[in-house]
Image 1 (cartoon, rainbow, N blue to C red):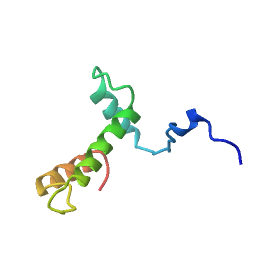
Image 2: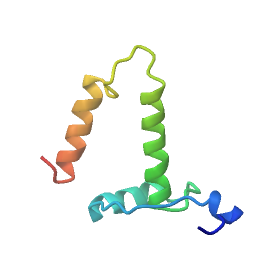
Image 3: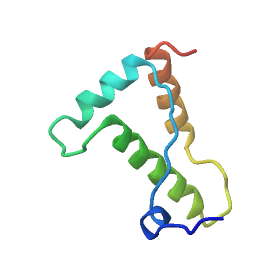
Image 4: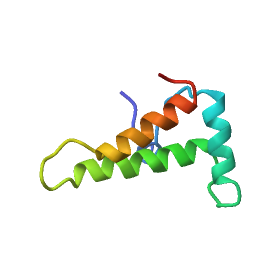
Length: 83
């Protein structure tokens, strides 16, 4: 077995996630002028925030969204063509 190179230890491996182009275009519009380098960077940022909130949830409740948030999210998804 070969030695692991020092630079290989800190490399992050990436996967691929498919998103509807309508959503990708909305994200592009949202990040325009913000300094966010890409749609992928924005999606990773949002997911990290959501997952960190779940990890920090003190009361043990696994619900990340309030009922109001859920209704808003469902409305947005419906607007994007999801039902």
